Length: 229
Image 1 (cartoon, rainbow, N blue to C red):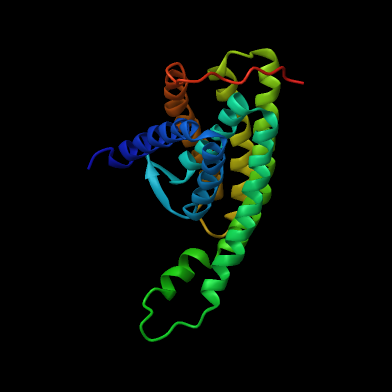
Image 2: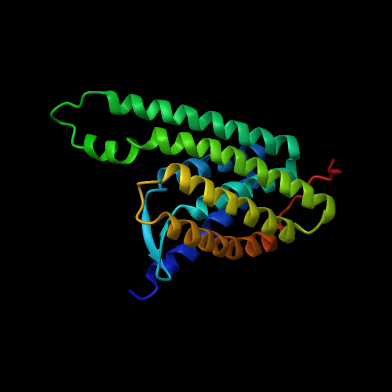
């Protein structure tokens, strides 16, 4: 079907953005959970490749951006300290995920188990992928939050501007660092993945953030009043 993948990608970006905003109704625990879940899912699906607009890309970008967007929402509604805590909690849960998935792979399957090969294919590379991703993601999320905090000192009430800029800059770093460290030998072309993945990330950002900005106007609660320092 013509432009089928592209339609899925735009729909996915919108859906992730909407669910990120929706977590605000569950308090800071809901938003923090989205930071962690989005980060973990993006790592699980990082080896899933497709073609978008004629470009060879991975399909997890909307999830990674949604996770970082949730950090911005934490900052806006619950303060910088809560946003920082979510980053460290993401690292902690990711380490648990790495360890516990390997335990399941180490079990010797019996004659009724028909899924061992599939689990190994998906989770076998996870220690390296998520391990390297944890380090890159920690740096990316810290950069993202630092930039957002900086931009908040300049444009306190301009959520759209500071979110777009912080995400685009931090995602450029994330794309280059993660692709080189984690995906060498696992994808067809590193250069294509870097260039095209960043282009797709920018598209996801441009697709989702205006919708989030609009939705925030109709939320039944207000952002936290804070003076950036």
